[in-house]
Length: 430
Image (cartoon, rainbow, N blue to C red):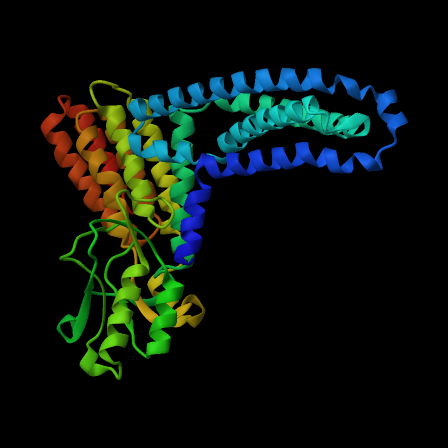
């Protein structure tokens, strides 16, 4: 995905572009009746009773304004609830929810349509035939509003709830992980271990400080191909980048046929291909989604909330998401043996490490769940389930299981509970 497409996708995830589009459509639709009135017989408008359209538009204008204000206030309350009861990092997904955007945009567009229609009616721009067209469009709009209302009311009853928010985080994480499984190395040539020849390469540094949200692999590959060089990515999406940490490496100028100007242009282009922002994004960073899920469990286990049931639910969610990664074909072998997995042959990139994924999710929960038998037991069972999905998972799950047992040895009072945890841990890999 190019930088501009990524930017456009981010803009479209906000409410105002959709509301603006609906508002423009409403204005165009309301004014179109003025130019279409010549195609409608005057007698037909009398039979239908198009003169009642003004009263309908007044009702719509007043009611849609009230509904919009009510909906916005309800959404703000739901976002506040999600921030306090789930995690502030999950609120971003609620703000990008398309159903909320469509509902509010429909209400705002209906309000604008009504206002523009009333103004044009008072100006006498429609005539009898124009009023008939406006009447038909208004009836269609009322039907759309009714359907939207039913959908919106049902959705509002769930908006901001812990279960609903967890579902959104799970979906975003699973989508990011699935995208990464399809292109394990962002579509580039795999870097299976740390570069041994960094001293022979030129490091490219970023001047901004923040999280990498997206890498424009297509543009990187194009410039690398045109310049006949290889680019080695050093920082994946989700990494907190600072001026001392290289974004990427490329051959030193002395090893290329490039002029100073061309070489500097390539370095600037490489920097432009890395989108850096203050916050992490779910879209190309599955580790962030797993961290947010873990954070929800941590908050649930805090003394202020004390909701072990949510922590247990999160462990089930994590197993469901991580099982997709565990059951994948070995991604390192796939990229080596099947060239179809490499879309950008001039760009080399590291892949996600299974150890990092599991540690991002389990490590904080291990710490917070220690001393709670029910959550610790579910954690052990989660490790057992994942350990049976491959040798790689077994080794990491055994490590997590041992860490949980060590934490519980210091905090659990009943020896019988500790014995039960140890007995469950023995099932890892079996």
